[in-house]
Image 1: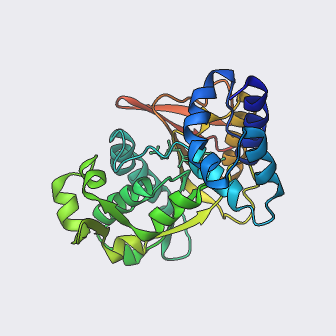
Image 2: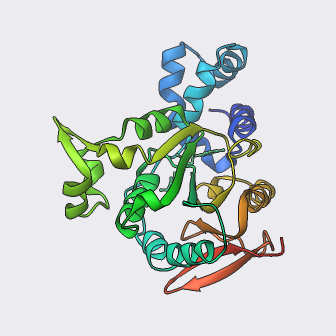
Length: 278
Ligand SMILES: C[S@@+](CC[C@H](N)C(=O)[O-])C[C@H]1O[C@@H](n2cnc3c(N)ncnc32)[C@H](O)[C@@H]1O
């Protein structure tokens, strides 16, 4: 891939996904798009780019997104965000909601923004299932979104390989919340039905997604430029309820990017709470 080809492809990827690839990413781009060069019979990356832009069905665009996105995830990834949810955020949120006169049942709305293949939102559903003794007292809305069609279709299926369930999922939870079907493990229907999935690009408007008490937006902003991160966190602040919670990846930070959030330390991790006056 020449540096001019990389510039054109990187600009195209940025325009369709917000993912920023600098000149050091030539090898990564080449490796991830190689199969599409072959599949489309393109002899150069210029040609691949031309074909993607000319495709009215946008199938090639979707395939490029699937190929470029890093979908690394796992059940209970990093563990502490889920412990934080169970031990601090849910008790605090429920206490706050039930102390105000409101319509019954109490609503809990959580968004896994960039949910990849679904492990994050299903881990959240399992935490809720275990924490709330009587689910019928709550109106729960768990939304998982991702830009990748491939990721969303895996999440929707709720089926995972042996290797995938062995990463992060304790044995007792595997036995309790999954059933084995041939070589695959399928998430139990009651957990599956707690979650809804949609394709969504975080660079686009959040209109129509509803409002949330808690947003998990982990390990995705790392792929964006500083200005796009700032825009993203601002839109997340707009969509969260006052006092709502934002949980980001362990290597990420909102400090210095958005002052509408208050950083809070709980045990060994930082989470962010939307300031009440914003
Ligand atoms: C590394 S995974 C993180 C998954 C999960 N949040 C976690 O922490 O385990 C990053 C995900 O972000 C998605 N992604 C990348 N750019 C996106 C965008 N502009 N809008 C929505 N999702 C995006 C990718 O498809 C991928 O599934």
